[in-house]
Image (cartoon, rainbow, N blue to C red; front, side, top):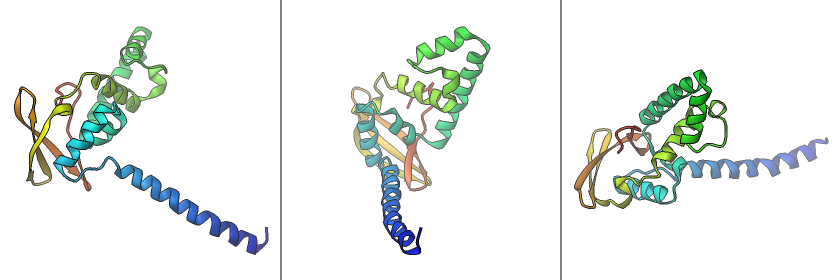
Length: 169
């Protein structure tokens, strides 16, 4: 390929790659929330849309890690028994083999299943937020239950919620 043609190809592809990189970067920020109110709005929208992937990304890193650890235990049981593997697959409504899916996919499938029952946040009304160090306390009004405080943790520029699969939000 002559040098001029190579230069032309580079001039064409570099801007295109820059646009793709920007789009990917912007997409990852769609879920980011820097205030408690913004977090609540994005969480409610994701829950209404049944978008468990967005909610997964709104979980605190510690919560995601705990859920993956729990899924690894489920996979160990499934590995030991074909009946357990089939039960896990059925309980989570998975089409693929849980062993092939891996722990993170299992953890996400469990979250999807958990979201079949609406959370209290789905209809909660924003009241206020209080900053306490690296945490923001989201105060909401829950229908029929009064005010509730939800601790959010700041990870980078974004707020995330601690939510383990047993105790709920």
